[in-house]
Image (tube, rainbow, N blue to C red):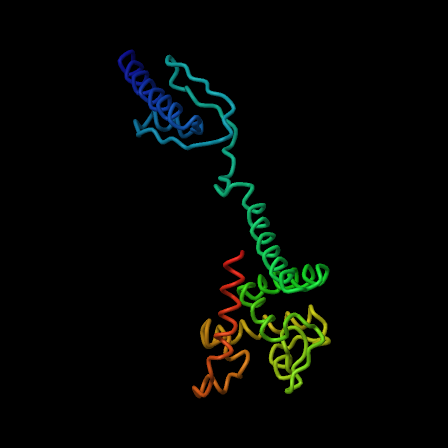
Length: 235
């Protein structure tokens, strides 16, 4: 009996040493009492579970009922820093300010520049489209004039045609900036998904048919690219 107790004490001591090493390395350990007791009785290797919710450690070398008393381990939390959302907001604010600064440099009234920028960022985030590209297209399409009307009944900042509005299913007045930009961004997203980034921009202006047949010109894309380079250079 005495030999058995000695053996148990040695096992428990080894377990305690292992826990101590783990505690020094990680700062916290957790072993459920029944798991620890089972480990001693069956001479199983020590399993250490990390926990950020350690309550206390109680251990007696003379007792085979020694246990580590702790609260239930807290759920594992995300390792993503808490300020990541703030960081994302900062990035969005930076993009929005870049758009505003460019429009101001082109003579757009500050009130309008702020409105257009917020709408561009909002809808581009929804449809996963580059906001700088959309701003460049607006400059080429209408030069920031919401009252602009084209020869094909295309209207507003992004020169939206009735066919584009029908294709996107977005309701409302095409001349209203929010509706106009949402239709434009949605239609651009559709074309870029279908044809790719560059041809999608061309399809937006010259139609899907021309791109499909290869009967398009690259003039529009070159204009947008030139403006886009200027915007990004100053961003």
